Amino acid sequence: MKISQFWDEEIVPALIEYIRIPAKSPHFDSDWQRNGHIEAAVQLAARWCKAHPLQGMSLEVVRLEGRTPLLLVQIEPSRKESNGTVLLYGHLDKQPEMSGWREALGPWTPVIEKGRLYGRGGADDGYAVFAAFGALRALQEQKRPHARCVMLIECCEESGSYDLPAYLEALSPRIGKPDLVIGLDSGCGNYEQLWGTTSLRGLVNGVLSIEVLTEGVHSGDASGVVASSFRIARALLDRLDDSRTGMVKDKALHAAIPAERVAQAKLAAEVLGEQAWRKFPFVPGMQPMLGEAAELVLNRSWRPMLAVTGAEGLPPRANAGNVLRPKTELLLSLRIPPPVDAQAAAQRVKQILEADPPYGARVRFEAGQAATGWHAPQTVPWLQQALGAASRKHFGKDVMWMGEGGTIPFMAMLGAKFPQAQFFITGVLGPHSNAHGPNEFLDLGYAVKLTACVADVIAAHAAQAGAGALRR
Image (cartoon, rainbow, N blue to C red; front, side, top):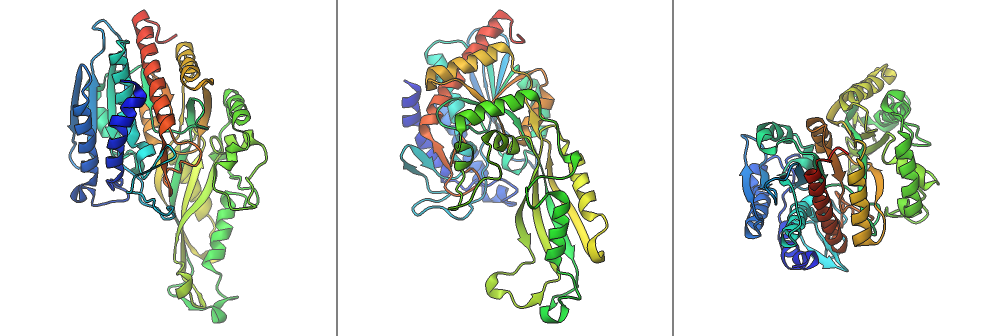
């Protein structure tokens, strides 16, 4: 059975069922164990894998006390004398609903429209386990070689993968030492060729709190005497970034961009052109922060950027009287360059915001998630050649490389755990796919071709392992 037919007949129906499950990550569903949605997603994937068994496969849903479950699948090498191990990663937990879905669409309502499967989690990242199976199944049917493969499908990624280190430690003897890691949870610059992720920014988020009064008072009475907590918040945020340009000011939150990554950004910009910014749903008349596509690529992959993603202390307009409010809280999300240590960055942000508070206001910054980014090791020639050949074979265009702006905490974990490994990090999150937001979709045609590319790369790895040339 061809990969495309396997997707149509076996994978898409499973993904439709998966999308219907509101398997929100623990950060968004504190009662996830009782609600049972994560368990339902894991059981769905496990049943499907057992119904489509691979030769030499063993499967287990692993459970550590108090942690989200993890699906572990091991596949023996196609040849007993094969060396090497491939680790394939994905996750089954999801982001919350988010408002703004188009009519007839919804987070838990799978809809196929013009070759795209809409619904929460299909692209981020429920497709991964099915695509990995599809790739290995194709190799086995075609009697092409593959080394030993291990699949880790976790259920805590959208909460920062805080359960993953415990599983990596507990399963270390069973995982072994992979020399190739394939992660299927990243993005693609377009749907016309294969894309490899070279880096991921880190993340510091937390709550900035400004208190000026013990209770709200009449704004006509107090304004001019009591400083607005929101105005103080504006002043504090200006310590972090320039409100005119959006550029973060403190040098400790920056990192030098390697020359190779600058060159790759320029190549990506030549391919993407205006799509580097037109993929976002700008309102009419809105323009990107910069005019050069290459600089926009570097902005979203290597430069620190601040966003305010939530607020408290601001009543809805219908209930907002003429009151000088006692307190403003802002949820800050600071993306940091791949090499910058997230814990050190969180401490630096706290120092910047809390120092010398205006008017003696009570100012606090309480850091939440602090996740260090990831920078890929130098890609060895055989993997570079294999990726290029796979992209040309299945897409008719060469592979492209680009850093991604989002944070995938497991990458830093796997990079630290397996420093000897090569990494092929890729995914289906392309233009308008809108992971985490409304109208998330999986481009099915792209997913089929990506599956075929993964199969070719695994076969190339087996050939190198057989020749003892994985490090070259």
